[in-house]
Image (cartoon, rainbow, N blue to C red):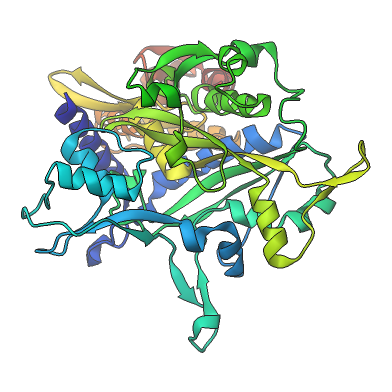
Length: 504
């Protein structure tokens, strides 16, 4: 079963390369692991995902503003945040062939068990206990050591210790470091958020699973600032949020070796498994975005609570939204309670005041932060994986992406049945009508109708319109639905309205 699932991933990777979605960068030169380009179809998909996230978490809210921070900032920012000292992964080398592995991934691959949150020392003990060796040549492994994931570079013409800077390993610190500048101009009172979509760089020891773990990727992060005394006073938390039901894998379940269970959010709030109402609110909002907007099937998602040993140095409580990937349940998104760690650290290291004046108490407070965060490459890959289907037609297996129309790179494709007898000219008229009406539309007259349908199915185009001889006589066209394959005749004058109806 696992091999079959992994085979699906290989087919998706092939589809992505073949259709210009995602492929390794500079392949002609032998690509660097963990770096990818988005092709003509992929860049449209990526932009649609970014737009959907921004609309949901920023545009449609009164309590969130945006920021676009620099990729390189003062290196003291990363000292203050703890990244210089703590942003590490466990590393082992093969003494024989010098191959390098992330220790936790090596153990998970070889022993088929989860080691989330286990310390480097405990990883070392597992390697020794099970006598693990290099998978390539059975060579002896070195002791586990930690490896800092930040990419370092130099600013200026002279290289010296003072010119050393880092490519940002997360977008969050851009927001925290800019908080003093944003807060006065945002004209918002607590609680409110600052959102950002931008690039991050992490020097992963072993990039793997396509774009799931890359070295350069885009992230969408929201830092939501809350009065420290009002984490359980969430005016946005509704009955719907409390009754929201999902699968949860709590820290206690993991420690006792139990399986995930289904709960309502209110049940876990009452048991204090979820620590605060604001945290619970953002758990629901993030899950709703993934299921209702992105279109990922809810049965493939769960909430997993971080156990104490895996909590980041800044976090008092973190929940992941996990997806059931072919290689097991893994993080798709994180929602962390960062407390006031970041603002306090930046105040300490910069000697600037990062507090906020509270009108109600007439005193200064340092806000606490709930942070929903996700990698967009991972989200795009997950959306493709979750929508990937195969169907058999006339003895041939065809691929189909049942993407949400919101994400589909091409919304409508227009085909002439033939290139002669005025069909191509009429199809061009329809293409231009739809394009001028604001649709992302593609015109295709190459190959048989079946092959044209197949090309559009593979990139997730929801609607295909065919202009045939009846179209010339009756001024109508055939509309084909991607998911059902059903076709209907629609008058030319109603095509725009019908496409809008089907896409929404």
